[in-house]
Length: 233
Length: 247
Image (tube, each protein chain N blue to C red):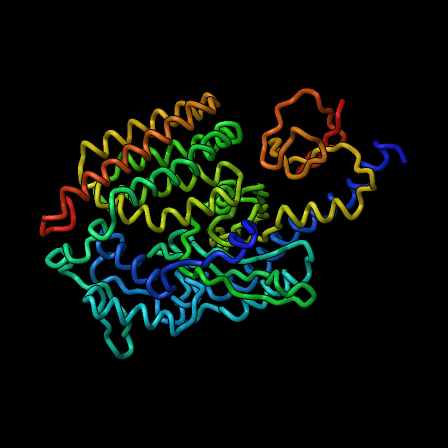
């Protein structure tokens, strides 16, 4: 198999990974919208009182999202609705993550930082302002999982009012694992970046994970709405 | 033999409970935790800090004995931050317990982490991230209370460290901040000092926007060493003072 052909072996699994993660966050957003809409009165929309908040049902949806997607390390719902649904501008985070120490079984643990203020986080702000799905990163998530991470997020609207964000995390190390599963030995030279050229994975010396690609010495092999693949020109 | 000395080196000198006491006491002294603010409950604290309930209880008992927190029972019970800290603060003033060399050393370590973070960030920040950083600096400039200045400063530095795209650098910065931020809040009551820090930040931003790695590293080093030297000055001048908070 020549180098170009072996690189094409990577494309399909990567497309699958990115599409699935994007889909997971959008599906979770849809499910949360359906779950929460009946709680909000159509006549005079107001906030859902804390005791009425369907915490268990929310956590069930998050759990299902995580067990349906083997690439995700964590998922959740960042609640911060706009007025009038949230007159006091409250916020809370429902987050579950897979416990890395339990490799085989799906061990889910709720996030301990319930009071975590996510309101200035890029994945939250961007998703809110775009009013549509957004794929963030790679970035250092030094608050939650302290790892190099990508986050796929989708907004939730109830009564056409912004209600919060559904999100799933994919560790950069997990993406690498997926690539190495299909990339033959000896590894062909390639660089995987996000949409604006931040390196996610590289077999090419001089291109480190986290760098922003600036070299003209590379040629695009494949362009996807969520990632780009390069190899030496 | 050297390898074994490193592998089997003592994990840490202070017990976990002592570490918690120091961190919370410093936060209370410097006003990062405010009077009558409720602390997370015992179970939450144990989870957040990653220690056992017993350790948390031991730490809370010490804080209570030092009159830094009080506990109320009942439905809305819990542990709360005491007020009137100023009157007895000099006994526990966080800087009184530390020597100049300790503070300067903390500054040097902080410098090392942030200088390389700045170097990487200069190359790796996207245009959007530069704008975000710039807005954090604006917020720092606008902040008027010492505590909010300290918080805005912490946010700028954490963002810079995360912009390096290195999880280790960002996490090291976070760990350093647990100590650093509580001290820095003591300095930011001084408007002139705050203004000088803003200047250092402007210089740093300029270097970042021009992707100038060495100027960025230099600018952040100057900021940190400037603060470290003022911490020492503050420490040397407040030893005899009865009031802990500089106003």
